[in-house]
Image (cartoon, rainbow, N blue to C red; front, side):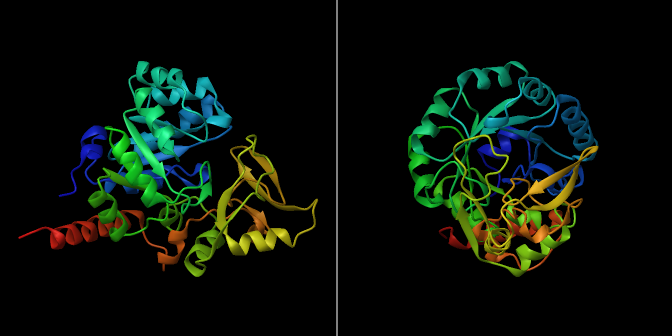
Length: 322
C-alpha cells in the first residue's frame, strides 16, 4: 500500500524522505534511512565543492538506496550544484524564487530536480519549470522558514494545482502523519526533527535530549546572524530562544568545528549545535518543528522508518472500505 509516485520516481521502498539538515545529517544517518527503505538527503551550505564531493562519496559508500542533495538558494554555488547533480538521484532547492535555469542544469547532469515550496503560486512555478518533485513545507516544521502557511490547507491547495508528485513536510513525526498525507493525495513525507533525535544524527547530545524533553517551539526572526537572506524566520525550541535572549548582545555563545576549521557561534547565530559544539550549547539554534511534542526518545533511524511505515499502512488498511 505504500508504493507511491514518489517511491517509483526515486527508487526507494517507502515514501519517507530524510530532510536535509546541514551538519546534522551524516553518512551513517543516510545509510540507516536508506537501509530501511526511505530516501536520504544531505545539505552543506557554504561548503566548497571538494568537501561536498567527499561527503557525497561517503554517503554513497553507506547508502543502500537513493539519496539526494539540497541547495539553499541564498548560498547557491554552481560548482557545488554541478558536483551534487552528477552524484545524486535528486537535487532540490529551497528558500528562493523558482529558477528554471537551475532545474535545467540539474536535468542536464542526469538528476531529478525538486523544489521545496511554501505557497501554491510557487508550486505552480516549480511545476512549470520542469521540477520532477515538489516538497510542500508547512510552517509547523523546524528550521528556516520561507512561508507562513500551515501544512494541511497548503497541501490541499498545491495538490489541486499541480500534477507532479508531492511530499508533505512540517510537523510530521509518526505513522498518523504519513497516513494523513497519503490519504490527502501526497506521495510521501519528509521528516526532519524526528531524525535529529537518533544515534546516527550529527546533532549535539544536548540538542537530541532537548527535543525529547521539550515540546514547545517558537517562530522567531532572532536567529539571523550569518543568514544572507532578508527572510529570516525560523522555528526553534523555545528554551534555546530564551537562553540566547538572556545572553549579552555581543556574546560568543559557543564554538564548533566545521571541517578543519573551528568557528565562533555568536548569540543568535544561524548554526545548529552539531556534536563538535562546545560552550553554551543550550543557547544555540536548536531548530525543531511542532512534531517535537510527539518525540519521546532517541531511537535508531531505521527503526523509526520501519515503525512509521508500518503504522501508516495499518491505519490506511483499517480505513479502507470492505
